[in-house]
Image (cartoon, rainbow, N blue to C red):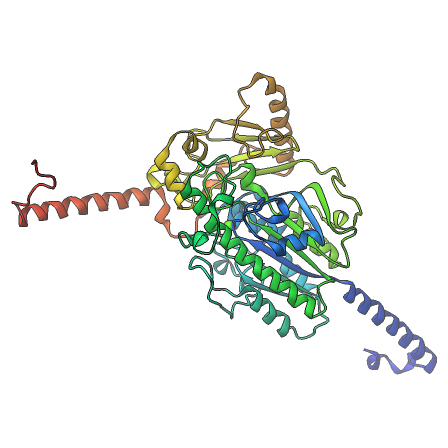
Length: 531
Ligand SMILES: [Ca+2]
């Protein structure tokens, strides 16, 4: 720069002053760059909020999540506005609630290029960014002009054989090391997205027992029958969570060894609850509530705290951007967590005591590609849920095998048993549901018809609709039909009409097979001849 200065202003005195100014400016910039923390964002795929030691769970061993909580903050009330993979991840990347995201509010959507995502904003400000494992998805981003996953450029070269066949081979920690090593300049701050594929299904059946889980120690949630098949399914789930937790331990070691642990803000969370009936994809407490712990040696005041304030994954983007010194993007509606990180206090710090949740179409499996629209409001005491189409099946139609619930031993056994547990997970739901979570923490006793709670429910509903309208939610503003017009980008195998066509083919083929069999073998003996 300096050698371009016109000669006539470059008197020795002016030169000296300019150089002093430049030195000061350089020092200031260097100090600012050194102050900017690194970000390690770790996200499980389908992990329930209360299945980590830090949240009181004893049957899933998560020493590394527990360490991050112990040396940082455990957020007791963390949520996603929409408990399904692609909608939740879109919310994280853009810093918006699901109903503010048009196409991105449905599962398996397109990801239009018009949305700004925090990894890009950080990169533009000088951060080195990377991703391993699962970023945004499932859905179509390439067709929208993205040259990489919206969560960042992938580092997925390294694989390792896992100890159970259901676990992905991705060596997340080794890939993170790869990312750290390839940075051109080690003083450049980084933002890395570590996206586990666990504990997403499918699991190796009975891997929990095979690897030493004692089924007697497992706590079965009240919405499942307490039988061996369910306990074993939960044990298989536990093995997957524990596998990912080991990678968190290795990532912490890497940061420690490179001297970057204390200046890295680590956030660990999930996209929604476990891939079991009543949870994943459902507007139920365990469906949209998330584990959420944060560690930042240099930045979190009074570590070891438990914060009660209600936070949302859409708050991650504004938090990172604020700490990186990047101006908050006008698109972002989430609220920075920085005041909660910097506070010395525990409990409620900012009086954040209300949360909205909802969903539109997830997986296919209803006529006309209909979704199951829901909106809900959560306060410290209550969860109020409004189902806009109670005449539809909440987890998709039975003849498509309840497509918005991943196949599992627990699902099969609940379907076979019928009754109470079937009603909770799969049967029709009323338009209004009200749960007093202080008495009924998982929300299995609906109080909507109890006159004693009528006023409370009316107030909650009004408050919910007011907030949703302020956020511009088309569903609350009377234009909800738009959500079912958005494309589902995956194969239409789960589409209701495609499914019906398949059934017709199967039935016709079977009739043909039997007819041929009769012709070629007319004297075939009866299957159970009389004695
Ligand atoms: Ca998921």
